[in-house]
Amino acid sequence: MLDDFMLRALLAGAMVAAASGPLGCFVIWRRMAYFGDATAHAAILGVALALAFSISVFLGTLATALLMAVLVSTLAGRGWAMDTTLGVLAHSALALGLVAVSFLPAVRVDLTAYLFGDILTVSWSELWVIGAGAMAVLGLLLWRWRSLLTATISEELAQSNGIRPDLERLVLTLALAITVAASLRVVGALLIAAMLIVPAAAARVYARSPEGMAILAVLLGWIAVSAGLGLSLSLDTPAGPSIVTAAAAIFTGSVAGAGIWQRLRRHD
Image 1 (tube, rainbow, N blue to C red):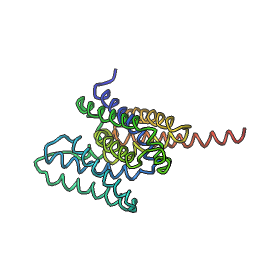
Image 2 (cartoon, one colour):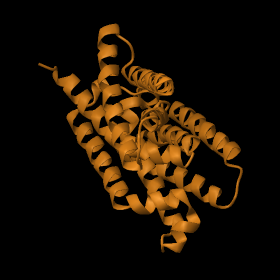
Image 3 (tube, helix red, strand yellow):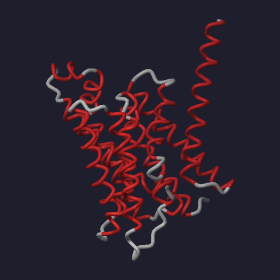
Image 4 (cartoon, one colour):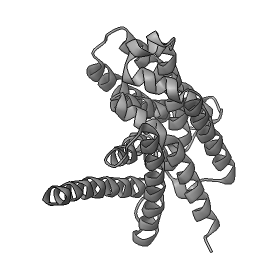
């Protein structure tokens, strides 16, 4: 019989994996890894603003993550050098958030939980918020799946089919901001990008279709959550980093397994 806190942690991790799996596929296909990093780092600034104005941390992180995502998307559309721009914005937002929290002496908060996650302390009310966020992301992706795929393959092809690439970028931007806000308590701002990228990268090794890759990414994310929580409980390690470590191990095993399979087929 699972303890109550462990059940909540597993459910929260499963919900985050369900949203980050298919979204992570688009992050990889569109080479948006640093984009996700910048959006996640901005969440710490959202935490500071939420505490300063006594509003929901979810709403604060959602607003700042969405603002960062829209800003980056706008700059990308104007031809800015995105590697440099993203580097400046990501680290500036994180530093500004940490500095802003220091100006709130009346508020006592452990930023470690927001930087690296604290999935073992997720409450039932927070679980409902995470679930709503995950459902919103999945709903957006399912609604625009074909259009998103077409725009990812070729913006010219999308336009010839009556699809607006800028609208599809906005959908991904919104989905990414919601995922960051919902995932903050689970894996933290510094590890959200890893949960987006690593399961999807592991799934790409074996997937034969975009839909197959998305489903496999979700399954691998669930495995990583379960294995990471088990590792955390048995070895007394931080839960968020343990989940990402498990995901990294899955990726390593996937790549190694694919290499061995290809060698065996050549010998046959």
